[in-house]
Amino acid sequence: MLNRAQAFAAVARLHAQATRDAPAAVLVVRLQRLREIELAFGYEAAEMLCGEFERRLQALLRAGDVHLRTGESDLLVLLPDLRGRAHAALAAAKIVRALQAPFDTTAGTVHPLVVVGIALCPEDGETSELLCRRADRACDEAAGHVERLAFWRAPAIPVEAVQQALRTAITDHQLQLHLQPIQRLADGRIVSYEALSRWTHPVLGAVPPALFIGVAERSGQIADLTRWTLNVGLRHLADLRRADPEVRIAVNLSVEVLQLPGFVDQVFDLLRLWNVPPGSLVLEVTESALMRDVGQCEQQLAALRAGGVRVAIDDFGTGYSSMAYLHRLPVDTLKIDRSFIQEMATDTRAQRLVGTMIELAHHLGLGVVAEGVETPESRMQLAALGCDHIQGYLIGRPAAADEVVAAAFASATARAR
Image (tube, rainbow, N blue to C red):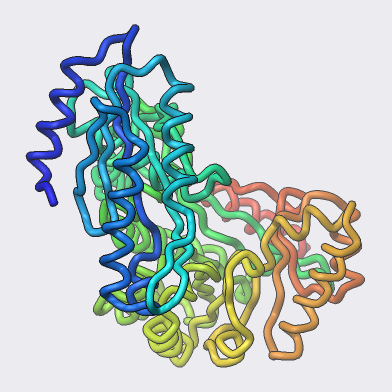
């Protein structure tokens, strides 16, 4: 197995040979779920599979191609003298097909999952390290593609620039908090708001939330970002409660942050700082993230809920929760993912599925919020199905927190007249 410096040196040699007319490609080939294979089939079987991978790969490569093992489940493939992008895609597709073929072991047949990320040389990077990082990033993206391969794509905003600027943005309060209303269907009242971080950089412009939140998770800044959102969200909640003492605020919570030592205490410290009751805070955890470490999350969520904080499972229906986990998890609310809501208008099966989710939640004593409600028809359907709350553009788009607070006071004043 090569160390990083040796791998970079090999890529540097490839980079030196590549031209626009005869480009090269750097491929990161990754065997997914190796840990699961070790547990299911044994360590020896997993080692045999990794060896078989290299043999299969070697049989596919041309005389001048190079493959290097850079990790337990990662291979680096260098393809010089290509005829273009399509040539690289063809080679990657052949690798995926060959490596995903079933592999027989003494413990049974393994069905491997492989992803391939591709960076083209010289156009996708000036240095060997940058080419490797971009192929690695493309490998992550390939996991969501049917073809199991992906080219690195230059983002509208460079990820490296976002990572460098984000820490300053958090510490210097350059982020903005927006609030999106959640309506109670029974009487049409706005009873809660979801807190959403937004960022407009003086040079980069408006940075998409999915981009900077993803960067925060990968760079270890998600704890700082979450604390910022909680602190600012609770400050605005304190103002909102002067207009409506029953209003709540919901904050998205990363599982990684939930498991940090002292996080639960920090939440209660912030509640005391802004003098808001714990029951007015809802922490939202996505279903798929929650299921990755149910045991640890269950303990932390139980501690939060024991102190009065409410807990919601976000994007419900898109993960892989089991009924046993749902029954025992300390949660108050299910938020049905927008994809189901938006399909209801044209798909009766989607409508029945949403109705089943609502019925299940109510049987477990949980409330329900439907996300992504954009039409009056969806609202009528959800009301008929017994949904408790709705959120989406029909009710209101996310707006700057200061504007939301001002509007809440204006509405409270008008009701008092």
